[in-house]
Image 1 (cartoon, one colour):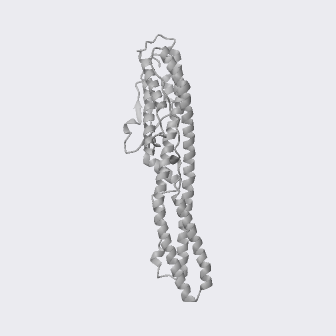
Image 2 (image 1 turned 90 degrees about the vertical axis):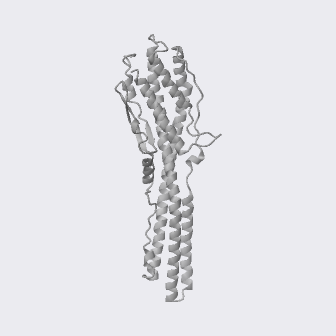
Image 3 (image 1 turned 30 degrees about the vertical axis):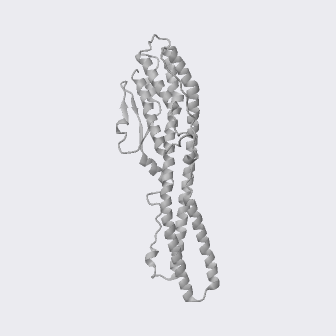
Length: 339
């Protein structure tokens, strides 16, 4: 702040702080917030990421695309034009391919869901630790210093964040379909052994092949319909927890940056101005008061809901993350105005 504190390059320090992320839930929602030029010549900015991009990224990571399962059923057009053995072979092949595809998708979903869950738990732990340190030590010191300088301020309570089990739940619907498919595959193998004991000639053999092929094709068709419906639910769940992870990581980085970088900078400013004759109405002290008031609100705001009401939804967490990003940049610009 050259006009107030020549010994501290606040503008340079602000420019090195974490650049917060805005999650865009509709087109051009934050078009005017991507880059903001301050009066001191330092540019404050945001990382803007589309909500849809987060969803697509989470699906791609887990091996999903718009069409979850695209098993070919061209054998339906071949019914009546092939012999029973070939038809049965293709029916079994379709069943096997669909089952293998389901296993890969579900395994990838569980893997990435667990990864996101671990990230979220780590983020929440960091947020809680920073909140505790922030409210019990840092803001107490800042408040005391500001009070000594004649600036009235108060310290409120803070909320420890609790993760509701529902937030981290894994959708198990496809696991149930997988079990049902396994049972059906086992059943078809059992009927093979039974048929070998009862075979009565070529005609019976062909009829049985066609009958089994028809049954398998019908079941594959039924399984595919169920899988497509449940897969959309699985995609939605992966999208939900991916948004939680991105939003909470942004919150965690802001809190970490406040604790590690911004607050020491504010304390350094306070220590320097204690030696000078500033009135409580001076712009520098008003800027500090405004900044600390914003920081206080950040620490006191509940992120993940509370046990008395309901757990936070994906939209709740995105909204909080966006608001925090805007508030964080507001602090930067408040300090830069007097730099």
